[in-house]
Amino acid sequence: MSEFEIPKTLNNPLSHLISDEIFELLESRGLIHERAVRDYRIRMKFKTLRAQKIRTGDAIDSLREEYPYLQFDTIRKIVHNPPKQVNV
Image 1 (cartoon, rainbow, N blue to C red):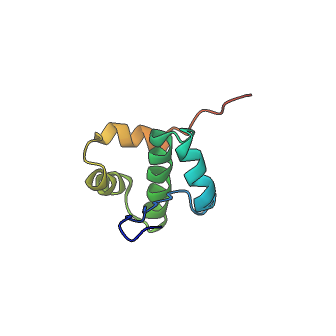
Image 2 (cartoon, rainbow, N blue to C red; image 1 turned 90 degrees about the vertical axis):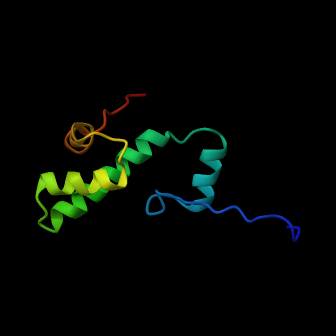
């Protein structure tokens, strides 16, 4: 690495499932579906908030602060409707 190269920062939102190297490889080949990863993160944060005894509406409002471009009903659908399974 030359002294003028800026190191690439990698934010692996799936670090508990796959390594950073695998995530980077999948992302570089266009195999990461950004919206699906976002929805997964929303579902995990919602579960964490609910485990802390936070009311459903308050948990969704908290998620809206992090994702202000999403409507309340959109987040509600994400957290209450599991993703469809793909049969290969």
